[in-house]
Image (cartoon, rainbow, N blue to C red; front, side, top):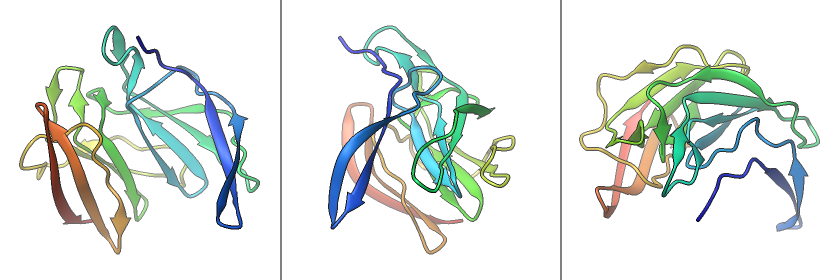
Amino acid sequence: TSTSVDAGWRARFADGKVGAWEPLPATPEPRSHHSAVVVGDTLFAIGGLNGNPAGKNVPLTSIIAATIARDGSLGAWRHAGALEPALATHATAAANGVLWTVGGVEENARFSRGVWRAESSGGLAASAWTRDTMGLAEPSSHVHQMPVFAGKLYRVGGGARRVVHGQVLMAPV
């Protein structure tokens, strides 16, 4: 069995190597299968699950945030909004002050074609989320990644309905 753990860690980089991991303030509630993104000096954790992902769990709509200090330490976690429906195994990226969340599993029940956006007000909170009408051509879930480069989002890999794929999609933002 597995459970969610509410721990946070950081590691310092020096001479091209990762240093020892250091504990940081834990999240207010355990979460897994969430997305995380940094905007400015703020770390956001979006959605996910609390509990055993393969068993009893609670899908989360909450978005939490913590300020990252110059030395890499984290301030206290705070509530920074919510995203409905509850999403897990989604991907989130930040571009031009906008948070983009794509795909995932909605409400622990169905794979999502959804694309959501929210303005980030100075990195402190996410405004109301809106669902983009374009969406994805097909549902995307599980462990896809979404880097940003030169004003474009890249959705890389993932899977849905027990099929893993290597599909790469790009969208300008």
